[in-house]
Image (cartoon, rainbow, N blue to C red; front, side, top):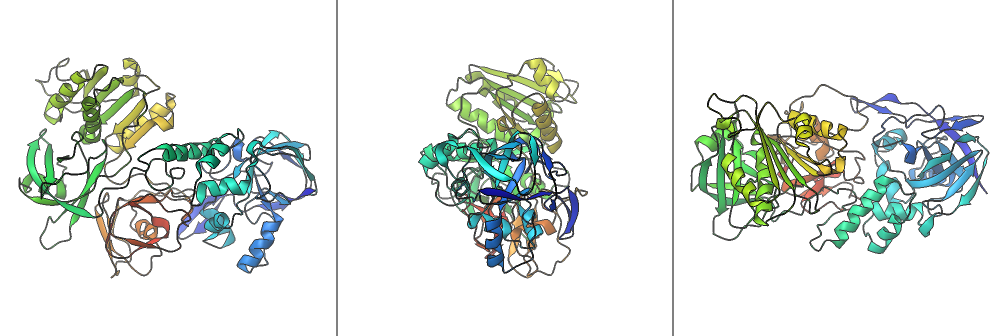
Length: 587
């Protein structure tokens, strides 16, 4: 008979780590006597990061005494105490290769259901003083699991654990964990997992993404369950010379370059919404500068069009505007990016401000070329007609689409700008405009523009009831950070690291416009990015979760340690990789 050995609780607290403060409740203390278990947690316990932990599906974490013994042998340690792995219940029995998702157990007067394996993050490594721990738990098949509380009640160390229900499909915690994280994702096993009602929604979403990837004839590489937004692999690595064949002013501040291959060969057709990276030698005695630009033209394999806004004090945009001429040859990366049209039949809402129109006009071209009958909304904000790029081009494209709608807002129209002709309304695009236009809330929304524009509209759409899985955003420049549990600090623009004596390969962050020499003090590309305050996203820091997956525009890397499952082709996991030579990252 399985038995509850210890009930462990803890509250969030700040833990110093690598010069930062981590908010975490991974430190648990064993408590005596009966404890009430409620819908969201055990009395006296609380989760520190509700985005990654907690909620009804992850109310109680379970870990087994047998795994304690395993890790004592594996790590050569004897100093473990109950709650060491951040679990609420330490149990005798209930191994991960026996317990199944959907199994139900009565402990004391409470009733529980198994919902998912533990999702490991870097904080268990801090608690264990073993940075590899997140990867080890997955690789060794000993993650532990979460319980949902079906009936609240009291539990106490020493209680027997009685199985009262058997999960459908009889898929063990170990099997479900391996199905998501380890190489090899059999279609039949994914379908089995999706037939288990108790499996938490997050894991179901991952498996649905993997199933769609398996069914896609042009399936990309990598693990769609861990990175559902990743695009297809780039058509070439590094940079390719392309010739400027046209230079077209689109407004007083936006200039388009049309690029073709030097030898006349066909280019790989880009997906509408993707971008390229340009490498430009702006100064003869300085390093090459890199910038990312969305493709703004229609689909096809003859040419690419980029459209660049001249920014105040913008070195690269000024160089393109003033010095790049027809016939010049530029170094250009392959198109990449996941900000692309989805292939369902929902209405489409294309929302942009300023030069943010570039990726969404590429989408409009693609819809017009296929004669789409979907409902399409074009909503754009500009200051005035002089700064309104692509105005006539958009009007012509919308005429081709039978179910199209348009709304143009000017925030500072010129005296001769005509409302009802050049623009529809005075002001800025916001959620009230969408409400008044009766935009369908079940649509897919594509947003691009300044960070305040996309951030405010994304939040407003969520408050309006639009699901996060139907709002897609593209930012120019560095993206947003995801640093779970790290106390907020004042934001800084990307900069050279404090230690600038690196003599290794050149690490270039294309979106941030920064290049830094690799130094021996860094253990990973993630660490050098953090030292430069380049925005990054991560969770496990050991090659498991793929949250740090980043586009590798040029160069190669070595992994230390190897990731559990390889990333999408053309991407790398920066948390566990180091440069083999000069590299360019999409950060």
